[in-house]
Image (cartoon, rainbow, N blue to C red; front, side):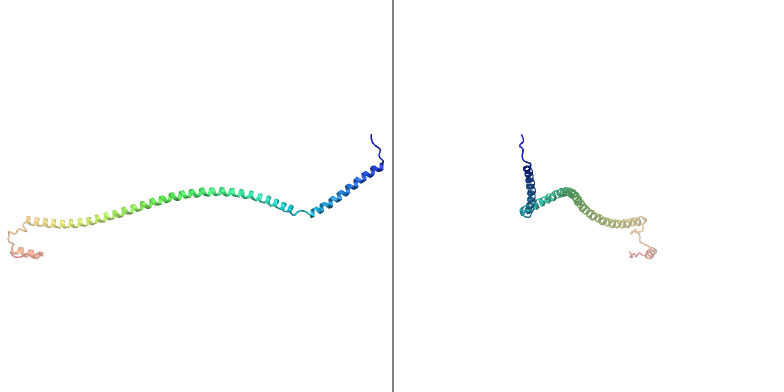
Length: 176
């Protein structure tokens, strides 16, 4: 079954394989160092672009998160602005209503002042007329009293004594 080969042949074959293996490993090491020095610049560019891509993707993720947070903040701010706008518009309407009420009140106050001054003027006139009427009434009453007592009876001739009494009181009477 097995062929008998001389032992030297086997040793030489094994030695040749070992020698080939050692030479090939030395050759591959030297060749790899030469290949490393002769690398294509495009490979370096590709590697740097891949690194930049990874960095950009990381930054993109951070920017997206930041944008989402800013979006939420913007919505919150818009809601606050809308609330403030509603409050401001409500207060503006209230101020407008108060201005209108104030104008109406001022007009009514002016009208009432004018009416009050007219009434005061009428009251002063009425008081003056009332005094005149009272004076005339008191004069008429005094005249009536004098007629009733006979002091103003023109049919009777005054005596000399009466004329002196009247002059002494301050009255002047003309002679009949």
